[in-house]
Length: 289
Length: 124
Image (cartoon, each protein chain N blue to C red):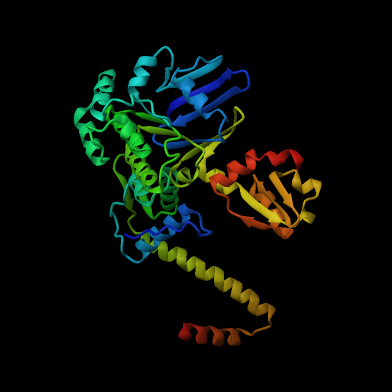
């Protein structure tokens, strides 16, 4: 399988945060969700990929090319959708497009017009008059109109209503009908990724916790709930994010066999969502367990 | 072709797809050599991941229900009905073995068992 993006031993230190030697890769033809709580390093990683921040060490290659040496070519082939608005507020949609379009070698005006219509964007509206959902759609229209092969999205669906989010997911499905394209989708809202994502990379406190297929992740993990008497030290060392109260405990088992042994002992086993998994792994209560 | 995915089912999504496509083939809604939707378009229509549909198709191929030809897509395999019949007969044989085992441990005679079988066969 060819990788559209590869990150190796990437490191970046700030005063109060370190992205610590992270490595992961993105196969083409798939949607990869990049999940983690706020402040876990998602945006830092994305900024490093775009060379908007200077890395301390490590390697990043996009389409098999070094991201700094071939920065210009790479940027031509990437579409970027940001969580914050990065357009000039006072310009109209049409004016903004005229600023952006010449930056791309493969700009396709027909395609842009098609998406403007498809997304219900009006060319004469000022950027500042667009709703959040419309701004995201405008970013998507730009990305799709220069035939981006890799779409990198930083929290694209946060703050959007369910209808718009669902529309955006449909756009992504359309994009990956072409198996040479890929999507890198960072989010702390995991419900969008529960269905659409093929791969999940989870980052926490600047470290990659895991990088695997979503199916494997959801099948391997189980939520375990039961009475406190089940939590002897031997059993509980295999649990993640244990939360106890007067009525019992709940925790995550990272292995089906662990869940099965708890079930035998009388615990209840539930299927987790991505959000559950994220929550148990990053729970602070871990310290007191 | 109908494929209905339940999120609350205990069955994994890929298995739900496998079962439903198999069922369509068994009942003859899908004919031999009929093309199946591409993995990517099925993922899009069902709103599930590409890997999930790929896994379903891989499973169906492994069991001999479909064939995938690189660059052309997936098709309902030829002669799957005989294959299917065989696999169903195998299931019956396994269940009979269980029944015989249970009957023997309950000290039923062969003719008693036969009588029971006849009644069930006629009733169901």
